[in-house]
Image (tube, rainbow, N blue to C red; front, side, top):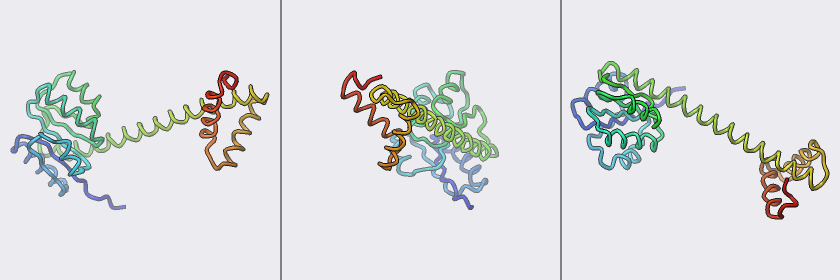
Length: 200
């Protein structure tokens, strides 16, 4: 399978530093490189450009600049490599919390751009995969709770065993071409509307 070339957006107010990053990217074979020197209206520009990866270079960022870049990284949901000249522990922790995939302090050199970009993409993909898996597990756990409540309602209102209550939920789901969790949710909702009698 041939991977399509990445569209890389470089955000850097310093034109000389931006040219170093661009040279490193082009040397690594990245031809789809867009450079933005002005951060005003950056979210709109990102939406227009739709980059696969974002490289942010902040020469001497102040707190407000860092915070606005961290807010940006939370919003765009893309791999972000951020270069800064100096940093402190709080900024590093804030970068990690914001989902910055690579936060590089005092490391802007042309030959380092490609490995850092590769790492940012890999790390972003790994975190995205973990987040998806966590969401699936949470969903399954929530479904299990709803199914257990529905079984309890059926056991109490119809005098069924747990196995029989589950079998009834499953049969109803099959007959209606629905998921057991959807049938269970409907039953729990209906029982809630009918009052204490239907509740566990």
